[in-house]
Image (cartoon, rainbow, N blue to C red; front, side, top):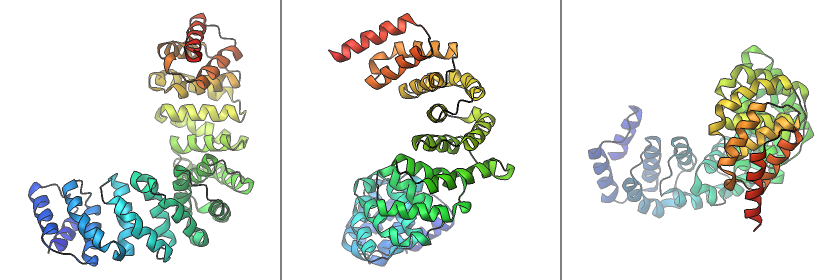
Length: 373
């Protein structure tokens, strides 16, 4: 009865928030022994309802522990996905690791299941710490030819996010991505190349295919509008990280970035400037256009973002006096928080562009002495 009630709540798209509902459900969970099928359905319903009450999840734990080896494949694939989408981290997550690993060994998961499970694992801290993604990556290798573009980008993103550098998987991912590159969305293209760049995995065929496809999609009015600031910044950062200069691609990124500059976060802006400088795409018009936005967002900049921005400008010999002065002011306020690399890059940037600021020099000298001592 309670399971049917949960299902009705789900069908009506109600959240399980009423205190009376929570108490009745908790009493039901504690009142009887449940079968593995019931536990699977309860978990699915609770996950889809985005239940956050810890006492309910604690009430499920005994039944989960009793039947963990018999939970349905559908439950083990869908429940982490629901949690990840709702940004929930209930205490039962750790109890799901072993049954998931057991079913991975039995090859119970489809290509789509593995992609969703990889994405969920990367989003959920308890699963991320478990090492589960290594098992998923290994099981995915023979199924990669069956992965659709969206699934390829999901598992690539997940592995890169968790630092899982599975060689056979990424070799297969690169080939499959090249073969189906036209089917990727802007987000998918960005995620795939970002994943390879994050793990510093160089694959010239993949880089060329992604660059050409991304450039073509960016130059088409229908698809260009789909590229958002995060896609643009990540794509630029990835190609720069891989030391891959493609002027046509960076030209299109500059054009779309200019159209959307008001929507760029400080991190997106800093990463994009860094990338343009790293590959020596010295479009000074682009740097001039972004300077105004750097000034507007500077109070929000992290130390590294601020340093990277002036470093990028110095690297392409673009000097905006106001930007350098404002960065100097912010740096002097928080110089004790700068690490040695940030201090080194900051002073190099000012020296390279011949921007004199005696107060900043004294502040950096003082900070450096204190760190050396």
